[in-house]
Image (tube, rainbow over all chains, first blue to last red):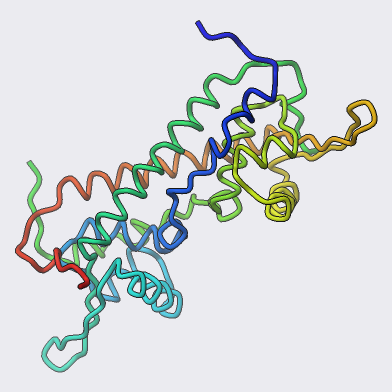
Amino acid sequence: MKMASRNKSTAAATSGRFAYAGLDRVIHERARLSLLTSLIANPSGLLFGELKQLCALTDGNLSRHLQVLQEAELITVSKSFDRIRPQTICRITSFGRERFLAYLSELENVVRDAAAAAASEPVRGTIGKLAPA
Amino acid sequence: MKMASRNKSTAAATSGRFAYAGLDRVIHERARLSLLTSLIANPSGLLFGELKQLCALTDGNLSRHLQVLQEAELITVSKSFDRIRPQTICRITSFGRERFLAYLSELENVVRDAAAAAASEPVRGTIGKLAPA
C-alpha cells in the first residue's frame, strides 16, 4: 500500500512528469488527428470527399490540414482522373504511420495517467470539489 | 467474421465517423491537457511553480493557459500567502473534472479506433506503404 503523500512538492519533484512531449502538435490538432485515424484505417487511400465526410470538415479546413500533413511528410496527396473528373487521393506514408503510432502510444499514457489519477482521487474535504458557481 | 469491404464509399458513408466532436479544444491543447492531468491527480491543488515543473512550461505560457482554463471554469486560481510570500494555488473544479472525464472517454475512443485500424491494416501491395523519400 502506498503512502498518501500530503507534501505537494513530492508531485512537483518529477520535472516534466505530465509534459507529454511526445504529443506532436502536427498530429495532435483535432482535425489532423481525425484525418490520420481515417487514413490509417484506409491505407490504400481516401478521396477528398470521403475524408471530408468522415472527419466532418469543410473544404477549406480539409485543404489546409492536408497541406500541413503533407508538408510534414505524414501523407501524400495525389491527383488522378476518374474518367473525366479529377480526383484527389490522400494516403498515409509509412513514415506517417510510424509517427502516428508513436503519438498514439503517448496518447495512451495520457489516458492511463489521467484515468489512474481520477480513480485514486482521495477525498480531502471540500477543497477540490468547489464548483465554480 | 466481417466482410472486408473494398468499397471506399462504405467507409465514407458514416458521416463524421472520425470527427471526434467530443475532443473539446479547450482541453485538447497539449499544455492544457498536461495541466488538467496534473490537477486531477492533485485535487487539493498545486502551486504555480509546481505546475510549471510538472508540465515543463514557461511562466508566460503557464499563465496564458491557466487563464483559458479558468475562463472555461474548469479550474480555480486563488492567491494566498505563505508567511510573507504570495502563492498562487490552482485547483480543478467539479465541473472541470466532469468535463475532463468526458474528454478522456472520447480520447479512449480515438486510441481504440486508431489502434484497431492500424492492427487490422490489410496489406494491399505497396500503395499505402510509400515512404516520402
